[in-house]
Amino acid sequence: GENVEQHPSTLSVQEGDSAVIKCTYSDSASNYFPWYKQELGKRPQLIIDIRSNVGEKKDQRIAVTLNKTAKHFSLHITETQPEDSAVYFCAASKGGSYIPTFGRGTSLIVHP
Amino acid sequence: GAVVSQHPSWVICKSGTSVKIECRSLDFQATTMFWYRQFPKQSLMLMATSNEGSKATYEQGVEKDKFLINHASLTLSTLTVTSAHPEDSSFYICSATWGALGLTDTQYFGPGTRLTVL
Image (cartoon, rainbow over all chains, first blue to last red; front, side, top):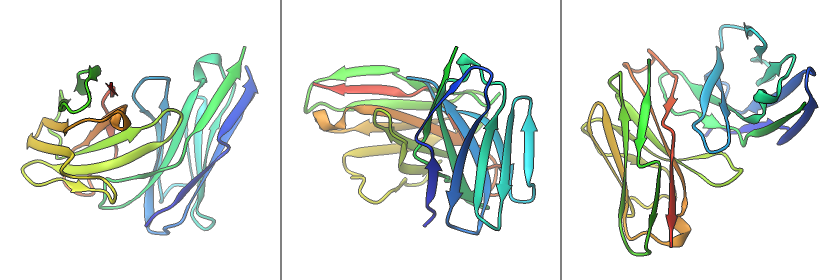
């Protein structure tokens, strides 16, 4: 089955800095890669996703890049703010299947 | 759009009792719903996948007789934790998707239910 590795497990940055979270996947058939943000005690919220026919996608301060050859994808957050502090999960899934495999999560802490 | 609710948001019960958790898609018809369990500071662990009108598919290691899942309609799935024990204490989260296979892959999560078994 699919295996998703996520690094780092904890990331501490100063407000205004950039943050990068990386994930690797094992199944070359995976073609959908969402990123979720989960604040403490709350539900995971989809913040951005990318499909395998695209190499990069941006939404304001958030961007995701995908390298299919190397089987890794990354979340980039620029100009971080304290409200970006949360746990971020990456996931990978195959076409025709709704069941993503989640990474273990990255706890992002943005210090004011 | 794509709102998923869960009820209750938290529950405390005695060991040996059963607890039912409801997951509802409020503004769409969910063809597939998922149940996850999450321990503190850990990732989402998929327990089972349920499709409306059919039996749930459980992940390896999840006891189907202990965690009963019913997906009776396109907007409601329930998870019943039977004969609950303290080790069942956890955060349970459901999610839902819609559309025929391949039309959408996005999961929308419920707010979660905090279960504490005394």
